[in-house]
Length: 214
Ligand SMILES: [Fe+2]
Image 1: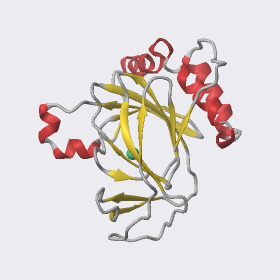
Image 2 (image 1 turned 180 degrees about the vertical axis):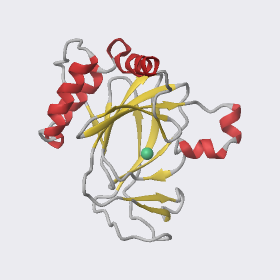
Image 3 (image 1 turned 90 degrees about the vertical axis):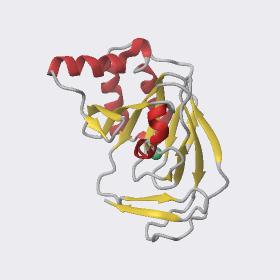
């Protein structure tokens, strides 16, 4: 996990399709060597509510709700080399307090890794805080009940101009309830032909509760 500091050389305000084109080029030519440039491009989506306005405009134009992914994420763009989604993070309310499924949808206190890399920025609201753990050498052949030797955790808040990069398999995190409604944007490079293993851990014992193989 990296918190990327965007460069001081912000791109001028651009249209949504201009930012997409920039991202197309960056991801196709090797995003791992250009994470800060990806971060800069992502922050352009926040200018004047660009990404949220695009999500709403596409829904109005199509007459349908934006494509939902999971319980809290909407697909904003589906490109050959990556996808962009917008996530909604609701604060703890009376409903959420009593709805365990909703808590799990948001991975509140659910310690897990991902089988894909992703970047994340806060589009609106105060952001969220996560507890991050790291495992430098990932073992894809673990079974339920096994303890994962994670390094000491780090509390990370995604807010302001931060851009979070989460590395597939090696970074584990558990979310905390946001203090107010927050929207975030993810850029998710495609992991074509790679192994897909995800672990969900017991947050106390750090042992594997679920193994999800795609
Ligand atoms: Fe997650």
